[in-house]
Image 1: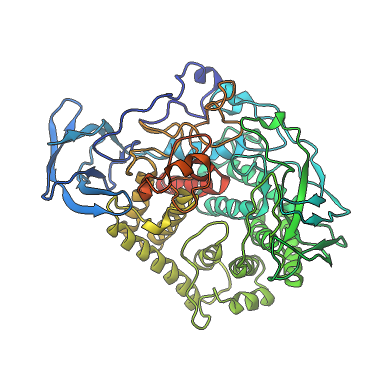
Image 2 (image 1 turned 180 degrees about the vertical axis):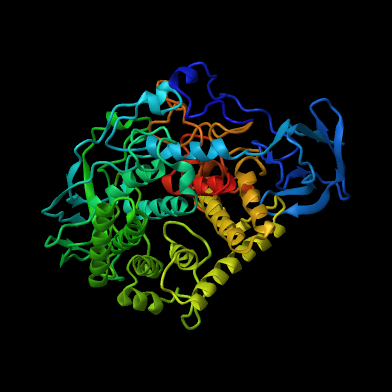
Length: 609
C-alpha cells in the first residue's frame, strides 16, 4: 500500500485525504516489497519456513485467476534473520495489475505491478529536507498536512563559541568571533546542525542533480523557492550548503584548541592557533532538549563548537563540488563556494590534526580518528573543480588513490566518517583531466565494490546486499549507499544484475525483511510510524504531528544498543530484528539527513534517473 498523500497536491485536496494509518497490519507469512513492483523488473518474495523441499506457489490476479505458477528455491538457515527461508521468484509477471502470492502455508497481501512504483516516494523523500529547515517558517501550502506547518525557529542565529566545562570537566576557552549560522537543516532527531554530516548529505544531493536533476527542476517540488528560475533540488541543496559556508572561521581569527592525534577527551591540552579558514564542527544547544519539542519552542542557548580538520575537509570537498554544479547557473555563488573550498583546504593543510574530541552536552560528537579519506575526497573534488596540480599531487599522494602502492581503493562502506568512495565516484564519473586509463581504474574500483555487494546479496537469505556485520547505527543509510554504488555499476556496464541489486536493497527497506516492516513513513502496510524526532513526536504527545511520508528509519542496529528501548532487546534479537518502531529508540529509529539523501538518490535513479 502506498502512502495516502501526495506532497505536490494542493492543500484543498490534501484536506480531503485520509491520515496515514495509525495501526499496522499483522505480519504476513510472505515478505516482499510493500509498495509493489515495476512491470519489467525483478520480483522476489521471501517465505520463512522450515520446509526442506521447494514449495509450489501461485500468483493470482484480482479475480482469483492463476496467472503464474512456480516453485520456491530453498535457501535454508539465514544468520541475519534467525530464520530458515525460501525464495519465490515471480519476475516473469509483467502485466500491470493487482495480485496475491499463495502457497500451501498461506498467502501474501495484495501487491501491485506498475510501470512507475518509485515516482512518489522519490519526491516525498526530499520533503524531509524542507521540513527540517532551520531559520524559516514551514508553511501549510508546502506540506502534506496542516499539522506539519510550524513557525520559523532559530532566526538570526548569531552565535559564538562554547566556553565552559564539558561533560568530562574540561574547561574550553571559547573564542572572540561570532558567526551568523542561520539556516541549514536540523540534522536528525534533535535541533543540532553538523558540518561533517552536512558534507556527505549535500554531496549526495548534488551528485543526484548531476545525474537526474532535470526531473527536479523549477516548480517540481513544494518549497518556497519554486518559480525562481532555478531547479528546486538545487534550491534545497543550497539551503544546506549556505549553512556549511557560514560555519567557516574568518581570516585572522585565533582560537585555543586541542591539536594532535595524541589528544584525549579526558585531558586535552589547548594550543592557540590561527583558525582562519577552518570550519566549526557543529552548532547545537548547550544541553539536550526534551522530547517532544518543536524548533520554535526551543529557547535553550546555542553555541558554535570547536573547529575540526574533519569538518574543514568536508567543507572543502562539498564546496568544491558546489563550484562545479553552480558554475553555469549562478557564477557568483560558484565563486563563493570555490573560494571557501580553497580556504578550507589551506587551513586543513596548516592544521591536519585537529580532532573532534570534546564531550559536549546537547549534541552528537561525530568524532573521527582517521581523516585520510576526508583529505582524499577533498583533494579529488578540488582537482575536479580546478584541475590544479597541487590538488592532483595531494590526491595521488593519498593511500586511497587508485594507483597508490598497495592501496585498496576506498569504495566500500560509505558513511559520514567514511567518505573516500565519494572521491573515487567523482574520478570515475565526472569530466576531469584525469588520464583515461586512471579513470578506468576508478570505474573498475566501483565495479569491484559492486561485485562484492552482489556476492553478499547471494549469501543472504533475504537476498539483499548487507552482510551480518552491517547492522550498525544507520544500517538502512549504509544499505542505500551500497545501492548507489550498484546503480553506478549498472550505469557503467548496462548489466541488469546490478539494477536487480538496487531493487533488492529498496525492497528490503520497503518490507522484504525479517520484521515484515516498511522502514519508510507513509508507505506500505506496516510503515514506520514513530521516529525518534523532536517535533514529529505524536507518539510522545498527541499535540505534535506524525511524521510526513518519505522518511527512512536508521534501521536495525545490534552494534550499539545504547538507548532504553534497545537495551531491553539486547541479546534477545536476531541481527535483522534488532529494531523497534519507538520514539525513544534513537539508536534504532532515529532519522537523519544523511540517510534520506541516498534513499532519495536511489529512489530517483529507479524512477528513471
